[in-house]
Image 1 (tube, rainbow, N blue to C red):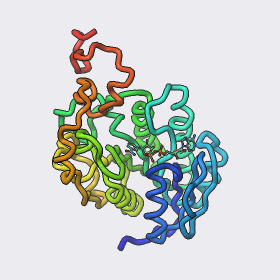
Image 2: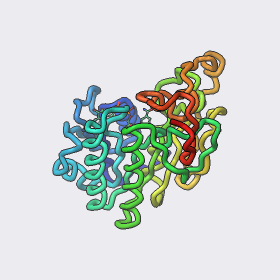
Image 3: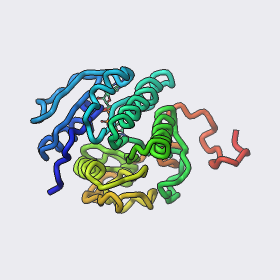
Length: 280
Ligand SMILES: NC(=O)c1ccc[n+]([C@@H]2O[C@H](COP(=O)([O-])OP(=O)(O)OC[C@H]3O[C@@H](n4cnc5c(N)ncnc54)[C@H](O)[C@@H]3O)[C@@H](O)[C@H]2O)c1
């Protein structure tokens, strides 16, 4: 049984898919939660939890809510590909408010980053956590910026942060890609608990995928340092999902899948690689 944190934990994006899962999991574990989201919280409030409806762009409210919190689990923001102007407020300015709050409160940030920060790496690669960012859209770009913001606040202000490069966190895998990228809700919840309760984290990255035998894409992260190992697996779904591919060559080539092919305007078979200028 993991110890209950002595200070409340600030949870943003509480009304979203993963926020609702965590609210229940952490509430059941006896944690005290300060929850927020721009959308109402749709479930019964967990014991010891408060909920305040707020926009991440409202820095004054975010700073006030974070007062006295020992960790900030930051899930809030735009979670799919959207135009630049829609992403920048919640995901860049909002994240700045989170980090300013963490600096003042000396709290640790657990940031829901994404595989879309590295989405244009090919699926044949095996990436260490310190690989280069290759965002697959404005959403992925905001996650890469968010990870870099964490690095800056660690080096400049000593704000600890764990950047979770989440694959596909959903009730169950639904296509062949997710046989690699699937992260079960239970593995995700245990990962967040490990991030909050670890003695120290510095500024680090953990790939967010379950123990899937097709997950050959990602390696060498901070999971052992924070004491997390995934327990679940997409493998039981392999039989039914192995042939469930899109037929889109861009989507199937890159780790980011449909986020890569969405709005893609190069020729479909353009050569990959940063320095390859033979494509269009
Ligand atoms: N679910 C996944 O597979 C996955 C994969 C990679 C990364 N992530 C990241 O994990 C986090 C949670 O994902 P999710 O699947 O629960 O997404 P979600 O969209 O269900 O939840 C995001 C929440 O953020 C809230 N939000 C949006 N704009 C806001 C604003 N301006 N102010 C305050 N709140 C705002 C939304 O109302 C929503 O409840 C997101 O940051 C997402 O980018 C999720």
